[in-house]
Image 1: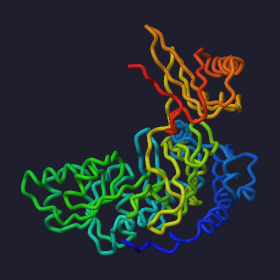
Image 2: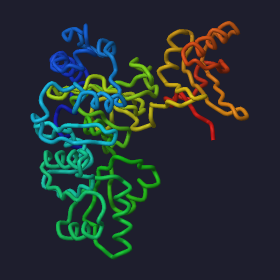
Image 3: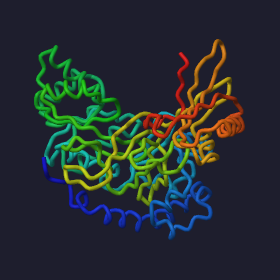
Image 4: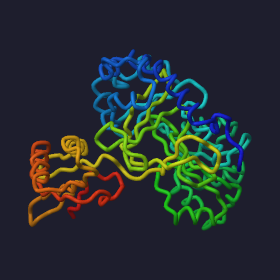
Length: 408
C-alpha cells in the first residue's frame, strides 16, 4: 500500500496549519452562539485565535465535565447552538454522555483511516461494533460506506449467525475490537467454519498488545489500529509505516500537561486535547483524559500530519488521600508556584495504617529552602502534608503520570 486517500494527506504541514487556523475563528464564532461556550469563552476575540499559541490561551473543556453539564442543560450541556433535530442520529455513551451525529458525509472522519488500513471501494466489511444506542457501530459503518464499501452491520456477539453471514458474503475486511476478532477466529477454528475471506482489519476500543498483533498476523489478517472517541470519531490512525498514528485531517490536536491546558515540551507525554472544525457541533479544546506523546518528523508512509505514539494511559489520576481528593491540576498548580521545578510526581503509599504522600520534584537548584517552600505549597494546595524529594532533571519517567497510587 503506497497510495493515499487524497492529496490533503501529503501537503506541507505549514499549508495544513494555515488552513486549520484560518478556519478556526469562524468555528469559534459558531461555538459562541451556544450558551455554555459563550460563557466559557467570554472575552475571547475569535479573529485573534489564529495560532497554536493563541488557542492554548483558551480554557480546556474536560470530557469528565460533560455528564454534569448535560444533566444541568439537556441534552448537550449548552455546547450546541442548533436543535437536536438538526442532527442525523442521537446517541448515548456511558456517563451518561449524549452525542449527536452530523448530517454530512463521513461525519466521523473515518474513511481515510480505513483507507490507510488497506480498505478500498467495493470491499465488504464486517462491522462488529455495537449499533445499540452508542455511536460505535455507526462511526465505522458511516466511514466504510463513505469509502465506497458495503457493510455487514453485525454488531458484537452471536458468532454462529456471524459465521453464516461471513460464509455467504465473504467480507474482506473487519472492523471491531481486537478481542472480538480473536473470539471469531478461535470459534471458527474450533467449529470448522470458514472465515478466511477476512484479510484486513481496523481495530479500536481495546488494547492490542504485540502478542495479539502477532497472533492475528499469523492467522492471515493485516490489522491496523485507530484511536477515536464517541464525541469526535476517528482522531488518529495507524498506517503501513507502523510508526505511531497519524492525526486525522480537520482536527487540531494538542498535548498538554495533565491537569492544565499548557502544551508539553516536544516529545513529552501529556493529555490529548482536540479542537474540531465542525461549526454545527464544534469542540473547543476538549480534553479527553487520554495520554500520548508526539513523534518527531513525518511518517515514512508519506502522510505529513502530526504523529502520536497512540494511547499511553489515562490522564485523570485523581486519588483519595486521608479522605480528600488529590487531583493532577493541584500538582500542576504547585509547579506553577515554583518555576525552578521540572516534572512532578506525587507518590501515595501507606505507612502503617495511614496514607502518606511523597512529592518528587525535578530541579537543578535543590536546597533545603526550596524543599520547605514546596512542602508549604503542597499543604496549601491539597490541604495535606507530605515529604518532598528533590531529584535531578530527567530523573522522573516521561510517562505523563502526575499521581501514582502505590497503596495495595
